[in-house]
Image 1 (cartoon, rainbow, N blue to C red):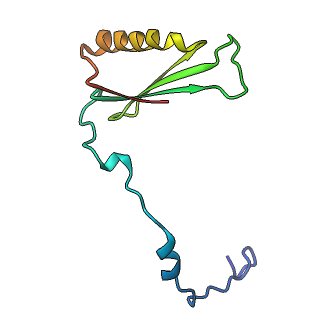
Image 2: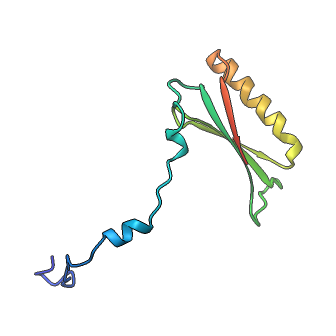
Image 3: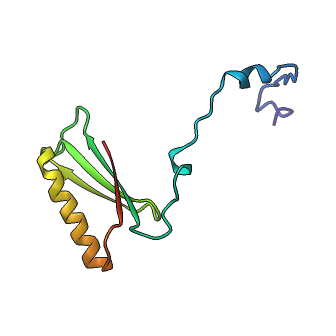
Length: 112
């Protein structure tokens, strides 16, 4: 493509010493590597409680809560008006899981 004039010619220099750049970079282990990941659906559910920033929904919802299955990445979202509706969303999600899958969630991980 460079020969046809579609891309500009680029001079690639291998004279740059990348070892200097590597010295300043600190790597952190991801949280996912610190524990054993879920091996089945509904074994571990991540719960995120978030506020809508400067946006109010049509029905005046200002919060939302998501339940994300670690194994399948399936998620369920509930829109809420107040924080006191969070326990109701937990109970609704738990009720749906019990009715549809005839099982219980083993572990919830809550992040706000």
